[in-house]
Length: 217
Length: 353
Image (cartoon, rainbow over all chains, first blue to last red; front, side, top):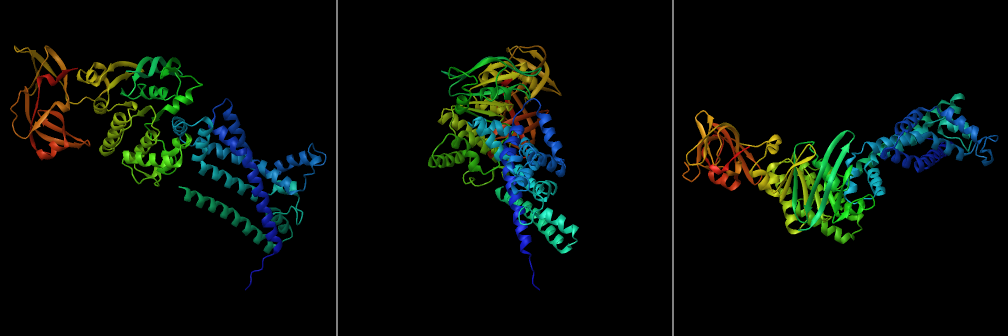
């Protein structure tokens, strides 16, 4: 028996990995510092800020997709950038979608670190920036979890990529939009193959992050 | 002798709670100074202010005659370091824990390695470099914390209850290290403890701190030889007895403890008295003691505790007496639970509280 793999599904899988990977990296740029700052600093309204990000954890992806669409569609304020129906729009959309996850998880990870670590770093001669770095280093496992969960949320979502990217074959088609389309066509073989690939990616990412963690400690 | 640290009228409040109340004292260069007091008396707050980790609500601190403020707090932290009561460790190897402060100071790798080797030898953790710090035993973890502070060779070392909840072996290693560092490197050490034995034997001066105020300050002899009501109010003093005292013609007093037991004391006091005898002042012997000691009793060993260099024995002799003897004496006397012993102490070893 030979296993035949459709070259299109490989291409779609790679595109999914690229778009969600890039979205995760992009979100790391702002979410990680934001999470660390909220976790480390005490300021008035901290509860409100944390509550805001927690509330956004369950934001419906179609609603977010629609909101971003209104901004980047040809009649929207950023219409001149011609982003709609491009992989870049999908990357930006997913990066915004996973921001609350990454911020909330990072904040919790930083807050869970024994406050004595801060004093320890200070008494050993660390500046305030070095203190923050020490805390971030201590909360690496929580930050790893934040990044993993964010990537998994991104690669598994449908609403944002569908509204912002469409489902253009060879251009913006990703695993979730492919599954949705093939499902309507009742192509069960393709649907099952794509779903298994998607699940395998999610499990593989979680497992490898776990292994990396275990090696570190 | 020069002051290293001067505390002037320092008050520290947390909301409505006053942790320190108008404290003034000086720490001399090269001394071991101990804060003793019950939990919540302000010992840790005092150390945190000295470590420039906390600010006084009122009052000032001077380090080498320089007033500590927000702009020089970092410089003070570079000259002092604190070991916390609750062991805080970075989630990494012993080596990386110990080198953290050295790396911040930009020491070359070769010097860092040499210093780490020396300091781990000092705390008897040689060869532990690659071990994960958080996987070590509680005593070993505390020794890593101590090594991480000592490796910086700062002018001031602040130790918050460095041996709390540790077994005798670890206590002994830490105490020996503290003494060595003070003796050989002339490091000024300020320590908080409620271990009376440690405060008395390890330190040059001590302050009794109760309710955020200094109740007494002086040499251990001044504080412990004549225990004040302040000390008795929280310290678990051993061999504390009460009885009725009457004057003797010789100028001493005879205190009746009940059950026919009497103790002669070199004081002149009548009526109800409370007194104590220091466990180190009690002499033990397997044969009846003929000496100048005015008080001799016969009893049996009820309990034996290993304290590292010394052994603590509880002896039932009508009343329960606690005696500290050296390990060598303990071995030579071949004592065990139930052994018959004779104990003796001088009339001048009886202190009225």
